[in-house]
Image (tube, rainbow, N blue to C red):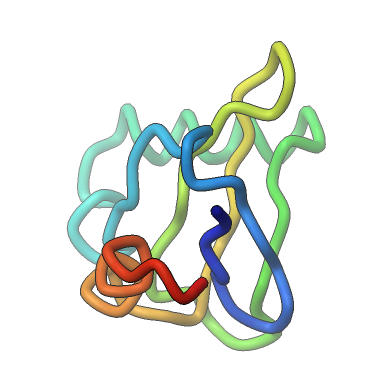
Length: 85
């Protein structure tokens, strides 16, 4: 099964490590540094043209990747819990 993270971006559900809220997670300087480092390495994918509300950390083969999403963490969680997507 897949998680639809927004704008046609699909992520395999079993590869998801975590779903995080941008407002609360980016308070930590460690998380901000991780996001910056991943972006510099080209490991960040965006499912939104507008400001992201959340991000999904997932395993992409042997590497960890990150997808910025315009959807809230509650919406993504709800999508993960359904068998429709």
